[in-house]
Length: 550
Image 1 (cartoon, rainbow, N blue to C red):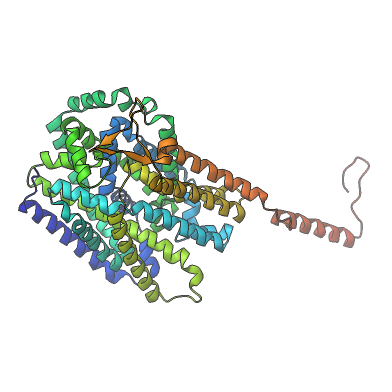
Image 2 (cartoon, rainbow, N blue to C red):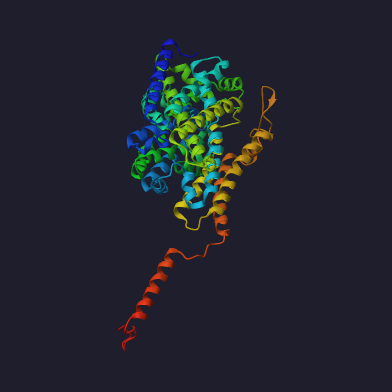
């Protein structure tokens, strides 16, 4: 039974009104497109850290990290460790992010145009938006499911909860753009951090560390602590997450939006290094909540909740159901406000960043003349509104087949693999060209899309350890054919490797331009000057008896 009361509702309502007011009030400062998309490139370090941390922790983040703790124990936190290491190393070294910020581009595809041409810029924009929207498509549904389970609402209110979440975020994002996102992110970071800290202390005192350790040992054995020996993880899981998280730090649009909004590349790098530790926390803290749910909640109850939502796997709902049982009235309002803060910051930033790519890169070829700032802001607002409509309808239609993090990895790889390869080659490989870029984009998008399509339309029976078919509620359990025979982690690894190979082969296949290089031109100029000087000299240079020049 949930502890959500009118007191909690008042706390949540007050917070939502305060956030909406703050977000809408800054709209008067938006007069140019770069104000709307990049906050005028005036973001400082501390605001950047708070904004990036708030953006990258939403309800969906809390749900998939808690699911990882529930289904994989402490080994499920590997993606967070990989993400934090990649964030710190890239911020510290400036690898790719320094030349990207120094270029003055508003988006990554804009930088690509300078190296690979206009078509690659447009194609990169299409792939980024495709992968990003499919990735974000489940955010609203998962957020609504959390609120329904945690607050004890009737299932018929799921669509209403999704719609209210979307409308609340869309209003201030459409009006204020990145300025509203940064201001509200700062408020949301404070509320979110306080709520997470309070709930974590409550979980540890109510359940106990020893009980949680015992639950992992009982349900997952040694594999719950070591991912390399876990039956469903292994080295492929670790390598896949290293690839994904490194690519995400380099090219994930919400991270890059903070980098490009920074005052300069030094500030952007400091935001990366300063946020790195939070990326461990965002996996470990909700993961502990999921482990606590594993220790305290009957698995049959979790599966029943999953069936009520029409989902094949109920493990996603273990954590919100567990919190609904232990968080008291009053504190429940703080929890829900914290989760709404996290979700609103995530949704607003994602809608804005995908919209910026649509406006800046996909629509660019169709703008025959330079648009006025007023017209550009209007189009950006319309794009954000259309993205919101897509998210609402996709969330209502699409239902997850399995683990949420694997779905996010696969959809993210649609553009993470190709964009990271293109960015590295753009910055550090002189031979890279448009042939290689196009090949990398096509291969990087085709493999994940093919995997998702085959999993969606071709099903095979699920088997237990003995090879017998599994049934639930009298019905045969099935899963996607690629997931069954290959596995999501190997699909992800294969996508990154094939994309890198496509970039190399495509670039090498294009005939090199043998026109005079700047170095060759300079040498020829020097040689010609020397010849002219000797020709006009009264006494030409000639070897002396000792071999010198006189």
